[in-house]
Amino acid sequence: MKNEYIPHPAVIESVQTESFDTKTFKIAFEKKALAESFDYKPGQFVQVSLLGVGEAPISIASCPGRKGFLELTIRAAGKLTRAIHQREPGDKIHLRGPYGNSFPFEEVAGKGLYFIAGGIGLPPLRGLIKSALYGRGNFGKIKILYGAKTPDELCFKEELKTWKQMDNTEVYLTVDEPNQSWQGDVGVVTKLWDKANMTTSDGIAYVCGPPIMIKFVVMNLLKSGFKDENIYITLERYMKCGIGKCGHCNIGEKFVCTDGPVFSYAQLKEFPDKEKTIT
Amino acid sequence: MKEHLLKKDNVKALCIKASEQWETYVPAEVTGADVHFMRLNRNNKDSILEQLNLDYESLVVPPKVILYPQLESLFEFQDENITETVKPPVKKLLFGLRACDVKAILFMDEFFRRSFEDIYYLNKSRDKLLVIIGCKQPLDNCFCTSAKTGPFLETGFDLQLVDIGADYLVEIGSEKGEEFINSYREFFDEASKDNIEIAKIVKRDAEKAVSLKVDFEEAIKKFCEDKVPQQIYETIAERCIYCGGCLYVCPTCTCFNVFDTQSAGSGARYRNWDACVFGGYTREASGHNPRSEKWIRTSRRYEHKMKYDYLTTGMSGCVGCGRCLASCPVNIGISQIIEEVTES
Image 1 (cartoon, one colour):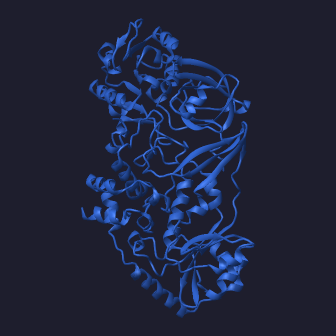
Image 2 (tube, rainbow over the protein chains, first blue to last red; image 1 turned 90 degrees about the horizontal axis):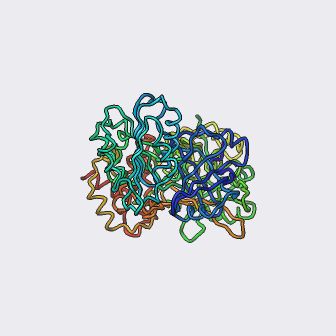
Image 3 (cartoon, helix red, strand yellow; image 1 turned 90 degrees about the vertical axis):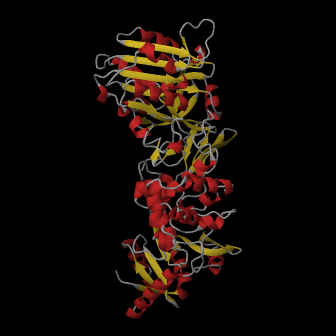
């Protein structure tokens, strides 16, 4: 029987600052065999540990095609993530996983893909976006709608520019609080709706962001013709184990860690209202 | 399988003999009037067995604590190097369990096996022998006949003892149970037809002695059909002090928290029992808390037992042991909730 609670040693290879409170860590497992064999799908997460500080679930931001390392984009939000932000290249960190289900991908070939993210909600979609962009030709239009509080808080600023220039790909950005140099849109992510011409009958939507954003995005998606089962939302929940045991992430009879974190809106609708999955 | 007899006078000698091969736990009155399952070892066995109490009414702390301790180390570390602390399986004899607690252990076995296997629990639980002594004097809080978890079981045990006076009638529920009897033959006799007849009467009387009756099936149905009025949860929320006591003593509660300790580069990661009624149970680092309101946590606490466990396993997470009511400082128990729900 495998001991699922033991994390594996890994090394931080590089650190990229995304904003005042968010960094992307490129991490490789210490054991070469594990680094090479570690396989995951877009939407999955790992349990990240600093021994003596704690452990938390972090979604994998890198693209599964790239072997040998992982990228984790982490906002300094609590005790553990603040401590991780103090770590530098060469420092050790411990990981276990991957856990959770993943976004449907191969199944949606030929369809238009619509990514809608808010703030730190873009990193969980990044692996999928990159997989779609590199697998170009397999999909219809790709539209990315991304909102953040301030221009500084947009993650992957350089990549967003690259994505925008790719064929058949549209990127729309908005911020709540613009600075003087901001020339894009202002307001919540749904403000981009008309500009992005979101109307579709068979498009697939992938949504990640704060609960209130998810609520309004889903309302808009439904109005634009997206079907319940074509809207995929990845949820965040407080988790301790990642393997369906500690109980913290349960919603109804589901565990976000093992049944999710990706749920279709058709599934989400069945969750009890009082669990406030999206409010 | 054939029934046997175990003389009450032989119980202590059997436990001592068995403890040479088995990690043996027996109910003993070691702290005032409270009865706890105590592990026999070479040094304490005489004093523990002096306080042996096989007629206890209820264990304050459920026997889950043997398989799933309130606090346990997941691993230790020195600097960045991890040392595993999980222990290999050991043969365990749990002698003198109540039927409801055995049902709860079976429930936990299933839970910790499901999807990812939990090696810490399963290693402790794997080689266990469950010996029931059926309850003769149920507490006012118990409702096992309604929950169909006692006072005696048909299956699920390895051995089941029925108190028929100077002896226990011993029923065999598994091959492991039969092997145990064969290994300790000298302590067991063959049961007569009369013994078996008396045991039937004892069982019937024990069932009658359970005075608290609730409509468990109707409650499950209402919970599953979402027909529990929110008002019920809100009323509890006004009285409940959210201490979590009922969940710590619940024999099927499995939720845990995880934390690290560290001093001078060495430390450990532990898990300890947690309770879904605590305000911080679902609070994320961002501050977002999907169950920020008390009544929502209350509904989760009861719906988990009466709906979600049932939908997942076909078995309710409530075994009718009555501990939640017994431990509650403000007199709330799941039996009352069941009554309110079925009457609503």
